[in-house]
Length: 49
Length: 352
Image (cartoon, rainbow over all chains, first blue to last red; front, side, top):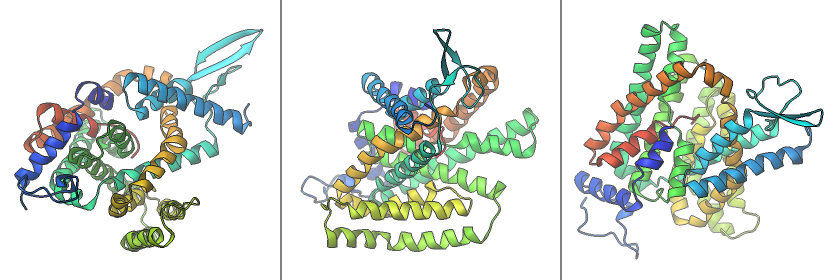
């Protein structure tokens, strides 16, 4: 039941989920693989260690 | 019909196919649809009498007179269901790469621990002191309602394409911590400790330490393109071995499965083909048996007679999950929609 409600009424988009990750890492000052840009380099300036 | 393996398999796969079609049509996770299909088919009994087709509702396993249950559980369907839970939990662990785990560990641990502790403590208290249940029964109620489900949440994440996002990985890790809490609580309150448990812990730790190197060595030496798939067989071998050891030690086989996935996540990050192959095998052959079998546990007649108590406990579970998870999610920069989503996923209930 709770999972069904979550999926039907509160499902965030993939973009929203990525955005939370960026915001969280920025606030916590950590980097993750999600900070990698396409060529495998770490994206500088988005967050700092 | 009763002993015709092919027909039994056809019924199960037919139901899995219906589940997939309904899931695609409605946008609801195939895991949930398969559980629902299992509930309906498991409680359905049909029979021919005097040339007339009779259809009735009967709890799975209960006597049905001249009617026969549509869905039958056999030893081999139980085995496939067991593999489904193990492989799915392994894959859930493999989604969480070490770097993401490190980045999100704080929020995962906090949400995971409180998602277990708040419902466990509160439901135990209510069952013992409000409903006057005996101590052990109250404890079991607390444990049962504190769970989430790594398997269901993983299926939801994969289908939505969320498993690559930080939030998806955080939720999956939190789910594992919650379920780990339930396994620990079960062990501490009810298990008998023996030498097998000690052996299981030691062997698991050693295997987990060497597993990334062993797997990478197999991939490097043999290549990841061999038709005989030695690397997949190797992972299954270790998965089954540790599962067997866990069962002998009266622990949960899915526990080493998740940890195995976790330590191999780095290898899987480099070799996405491997994880896709294993995922295809799991979702086609194993997990339908696991989810449909989960539905088989639900008896509609029992659900009807115990509707009030079940509603009270479901409400208790959701309220305590909200109390434990929602404020933490908001504290960790989630908006209301995302925090609600996280909270409700942590309130998913199925064995591991």
